[in-house]
Image (cartoon, rainbow, N blue to C red):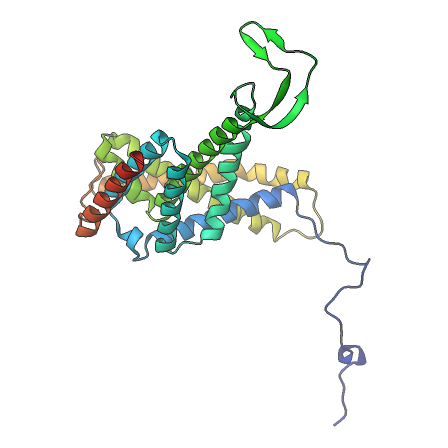
Length: 308
């Protein structure tokens, strides 16, 4: 039988583009923003999934987690020894391992926040102008000391040993506080964690506003993302970012109005099923032996760290 397949279809083609002919596609600012929003939404999905796993840390009652969060933050704040802060860091890191979280992804965010707010912001405190001490790295030398009101600028300006210790201590405090707070977030579902604030006397109305605002932002962001990609899928060719923004802005009011109607109907449905403005805690898990043992161990460990 004669082969009727065209010859150009029988020629093998290379999957690699020829150099100089194909340029990499560049995403617009709006595309990057939408993609980053989608990534944030996915991280929320992953957080809820991790919180529902039956691991040791995830099994702890949200009320106990809230108490431990406040307690650990206080311990971190009053601990003044670098060695004790390092012990706390190792302890929190071991909890991440027990919880089986993605340590690399989470600690990237933790170190980013700790570097910004615990190192870069407080780095000037290591100068001898603020923290006196032995200079270990000289930055600049002026002709003579300067006196301004009650302040004195010494002749040699540089980083001191005591200053570096202060910066390191603040960095470890921020690192430990952020890491433990994110551990509680990634191992506890958001509704359960919000309900646990009731044990601190937070009004039910305030808790309900937080819960509904969280869900409102989540669904509104998801709706905007779907609307944007549905609109862009019907466009052909390269469209300027300004034109895309005009198209999206024309849909903002419609999306907002639609979301308001949905939440009004949701509220009426809640009222029809007996909602009276109170946050009920009967759906929470009861305290177990694991909760009491965890509370005792962490409280005892915190007291031991203070007296180191």
